[in-house]
Every structure is written in C-alpha cells, then in structure tokens.
Image (cartoon, rainbow, N blue to C red):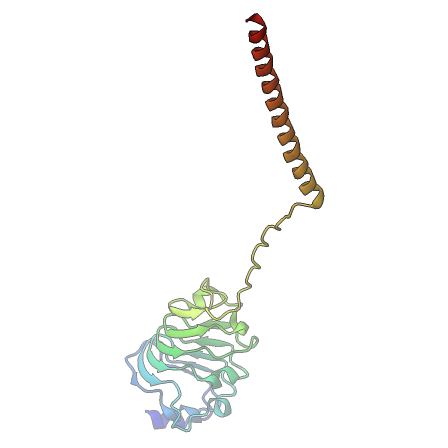
Length: 212
C-alpha cells in the first residue's frame, strides 16, 4: 500500500481517518508532492513524525500542503521544525499524541487553525502562537507562557524596588541648645525649691528659739 501511495504524485487530498492503521508514517508519502490535505487522524500510527535518518523532506516535497491532521495517534518525539517552514500550511492538528520537546515557531499567517492539546510538550509557547486560545495547548503540563495562565520560570519578572528606609533625623544645633536649656531650667527649679525648704526650716528654728 505504501509503494502505491508513493506513485500518486498528482494526489491532492488523502483522508484515511478513523481506521485501524498502525506503524510509522509511510516514508514514500514524500513523493506525493501535490498534497494539499492529509488526514490520518484517529488511527494507531506511531514513531517519529520525521525520522532524521530518512530522506523525508517536508519543505521540499510538501510545499503545497495546506492542512495536516495527525490527531489521535501515537506519534512521539519532537514536532519537526520543518513543519513551521511550510509556507502554505494553514491547519495543523496534532492533538492526542505523545509529542515531546518544545514547539517550533510557526508564522501567522498562514497558520490559522492549530491544535496541540494532550501531548507531552514543554517549554515556552512561541510568541507567534500567543494569539491562539489556551485550549490549543491544554493537556501539556510542562508548557508555559501566553495564552496559558502558567508563567515561565525563566521569564524576566520586574523586581520592585525595596521601600526606602525612613531617614535618620539628627537633632539640630538649635534643638540641642533647647535641650540644654531645658536641663538648666530644671536644675534651677530644684535649686529654688531647696532654698525655699531651707528657709522654711530656718524660720521654724528661729521661731522656736525665740519662744524659749
């Protein structure tokens, strides 16, 4: 079947969704250079979407691809960065797989319909994809950044300046002088009181002497 597909060089739409197909993505699909829509969703395809050891060149052979739906399979590994280089790709559905690693930076336009939910993706969501809804990236517990509510740990967060400490006031020379004056007046008051008491006692003694 795979070799038969590879011979369909004029094929523009291929939909094999909702079957029991399994195994890796057929390598000779690369020969279908006229493909505009490929839908293999809801099967049991597995393995890497793009094997680095193969000659599967997305950018060279799928330059006309507009819609790719590989959702609800068992694909693993990273999302090939070459997917983000497909100039005509407007729809990409990869939800419900086991993709891991970070998300390539796609351009908008042409990409307008994206779903990467329920995978094992991690890291920061590219800023070019921040306009999609949070549902687009849900089910990836290690993802962070807009539009998710989870902030990335390495994001630069403005640090508020510490509150200035209250100024230490030192008494001015005039205040020191007033303080000195206050102490002198207090001393003078005690002296006056002591003199008054002494004079009172002296008067009492003199009066008692005169009576004798």
